[in-house]
Amino acid sequence: MGVKLDELIMSIEVEREQTLKKRERSIAETTTILAKARQDGRANLTADEDADVAAAEKRVHAADAELVGIDSKLRIAKQAKVDEDAGEEAMKTRTADPVTAVASRPAYDRVARVGAEERTYHAGNCRKGAEFLKDVIGMTFYRDMNAEARLSRHMNEERVTRGEYLTKRAAGTGAFAGLVVPQYLTELYAPAVATLRPFADACNKHDLPSDGMTVNISRITTATSAAVQASENTTVSETNIDDTLLTENVQTVAGSQTLSRQAIDRGTGIEEVTMGDLQRRYASALDSLLINQATTGLAAISTVVAFTTASPTGILLYPKLLAALSGSEAALLAMAMPDIAIMHSRRWYWLNSQMTSTWPMLSQPGVATQAIGSNFAERYGRGVRGVLPNGTIVIVDNNVPTNIGAGTNEDEIYVAPSDECHLWEDPNAPQFIRAEQTNAKSLGVDLVLYGYLAYSFRRFANSHQKVQGTGLVTPAF
Image (cartoon, rainbow, N blue to C red; front, top):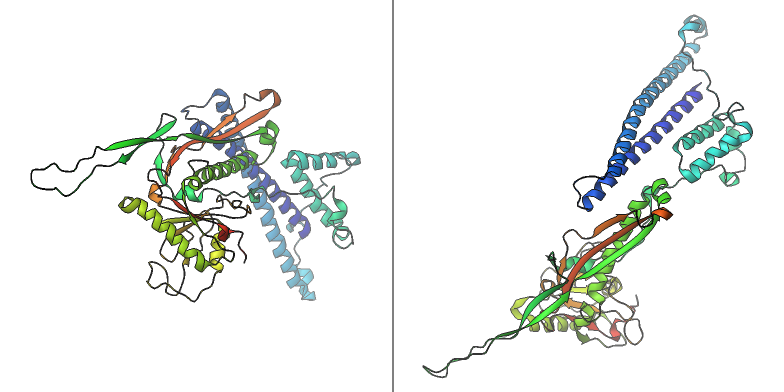
C-alpha cells in the first residue's frame, strides 16, 4: 500500500512542477514584451502586444488556480502517507504481543484504505500503444508538458509492477533508446566563449554626443613661448598659438541573427540565449576595434620599443617595459601618466612563470620585497590582473594579436596612460531591434544588436608605446 501512495505523491509533484513551468513561461513572455517596449523607447504597447500580455496574464491566473488544487491534493496524499506509516508502525508494535494483537486490531470500518488507480496507458485508452507513442513524440519534439507528466506516471507504474525487469535484468537504458526520453538542462547551457572588452573597460569613458558622425578635438600644435627679457623695455617673447583639428569618426558595431518563429515559440529560452551571445560578440568586436583597427587603433599609433632576443626571459623583458613607460612619460610630462600595460593572457602567464634572484634597488609601490610583481588572481575581464615591479597595472586582453612578426607568432605589449585612452559610447548602447515584419512570409524574426562609438588615442604624439619583437614569440613554459 505504501508504494501506491508514494507513486501517487510523485505523480502529483510532477503535475505541480509542470504547472509551475507553464506559469514561469507566461511571466517570461510578459517580461520580454515589456522589455522590448522599453528598449524601443515606447510608452505604450501595441494592440498585439496588449493582447499577448492579457493572454499571458490569463494563463498565469489559470496556473495559480491549478496550483491551489494541486497543493490541496498533495497535502491530502502526504497526510495519508503519514497516517499509513503511523498505522504500520502501530501494527508492528501490537503484533509483538500475540495475546493482545487480535484485541487491539482496529475495526474494519476504522481503517483508511487507498484503492489502486487505473494505469495511465491501458486497453481502454491506448490501443496498440498509439497514445503512448504520441506522448513520446509530443514530449521529445514539442515539449508537451502534459505528455511528459503522463510518461513520468507510466514509468513509476512500471517500476512498481515490473521493477525486476527495469533494475535486475542485464539490459540498461541504452536498450530502450526510444523510451528513455532525453532531458535538456537549458538553464546550464554553455555559451560560446568571447574575448569581451577588458581594454575598453579600462579606457577614459565619455558619453557620445547625440548628433553627428565625427568627434572633433582641437590639438595645440604650435605653442606660445616664454623667455628671459633681454633688458628692460625690450620686447618679450611672443609666438602665435596655433591648433590642428583632430577628427575621429563615429563608428557602428552591430550583429544580427534571424530565428524561426517556431524556435522562439516552441523552444526554451532561445531568444534570450541568442541575445546574450550577440552582446558578447558586440563587446568583443568593440574591444578588438580599439586595439587592432588600421591607422587609429592602439597597435597602429603606438611607438615601437624593440625587444629582440632568441632567448627571452622576464628579466630581459622588464627593462623594455620601463623604456616604453619612459617614452610615454616624456611625451606627456604633466598631462598624464602611463599607468597600464595591456597584454595577451599567454604573456601574463609566461611572466608569472619567470623566476629570479635579482631584485630592484628601489622599493616599489604595492609590490612585496624580493618579488618582480604582484598577481591579483582576478578572473579574465574582471579588471586589473596584477602590477609590474614599478606599480604599472596589467590588463589582460586576448584581443591583443598573436600572429604578427616575421614568424607570425609574436604578440605585443602596449603601455598607455588610461587618461589618454578616450572612448565615447552611447549611454544606452547596445541597442536592440526585434523585427518580425521583414521575414513574415517565412516566419522569421530578426534580432539586431548595434551601438555607436568613437575613440581617440592620438591627442599627444608618442604617448602610447608598445614592446614588439622576436622576444615575444609564442612563450615556452
